Amino acid sequence: MSIILNETDRRMAEIAEKVEHGERLSKEDGVFLYGSDDLLTIGQLANKVNLRKNGKKVYFIENMSLYFTNVCEAHCAFCHYRRDEGEEGAFTLTPEQMFEYIDEHLQPGMQEFHITGGHNTHVSFDYYLGYVRALKQRYPHMSIKAHTAAEIEFFSRISGLSYKEVLQTLVDAGLSTLTGGGAEILSERYRQKMGVGKATTEQWLEVQRTAHSLGMKTHATMLYGSIETMEERIQHMIYLREIQDDTDGFLVFIPNAVQPASVSAGIKRRVSAFDDLKTIAISRLMLDNIQHIKAYFINLGTQITQIALTYGASDVHGTIVKERISHAAGALSPEGLTRDELVFLVKGAGRIPVERDTFYNELKVY
Image 1 (spheres, rainbow, N blue to C red):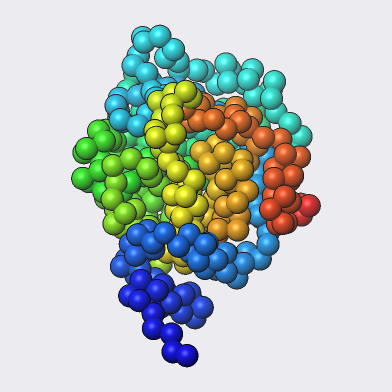
Image 2: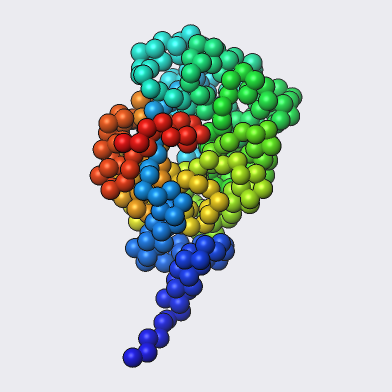
């Protein structure tokens, strides 16, 4: 009996053949996968790639999210966290104010401060530099993961320093790595339409290249689920893949779903689980040169995160303690998880939990 494949099946079979032989997928391949409703096959292919790269190990870190300021010059359409100076709920904390929060929540075994904040024009670059230095002096054992590439562009603008000078100054003060945010969707059409009042696509990519040239390892995100096209999502991944070819500087890719404005937002205002899992899987297939794809439980929820571990993800982020940006919008997930909960979550998916440091050095295998 002869089996005649239709065009869709033939394309999927060609992609499966490429994956089997470790060949790089094209932009057209990625767009085709987004157009396919064959989630199981896409997931199986991504799982195969991930098992090849990472085995059954899934990584997490004991970390703490910190927020020094939510005052921001940008008015991005998707952000419900930012405030104007003087507006109710606006804050800009001193290191001493932050120490109080840290000392209350710091646990033995914590490895990392994860710092996110606004582009606050009411303070100078010295403010940001000062808290990095203060944290490193008071908590020398903690790595400091702080500032997006967009924030580095902002610091360059307010200080008159080049990207390289800004980065080197922060590293000298104690910065370990950049966070992955500010990328949103790396498309100027998207950035203009969504009012992304921060670094352009080219500036964001240039900061990453500069950081990698200094020997820094960094992170990269994608904020999907609003007005972007599937072509723009894939192009976003290709931009990162091209930099990684040149620098090998990205540790992990973190696709994040846009959150609605309110926790009471209905199902039609949320990114579907189908899209979440497809995006994790396609990220794993397209980004062949980035070691890890992160399933960020804050945005996905714990159960989809667990399923994502068989769709190409090899990282579930960390303990966090109290996440505030996604929860300023409509995130339904916990604000943080304990080490035991993360271990439970990973083991429940039939995977091996591995506690790591910022740079994916293994600290403990559970």
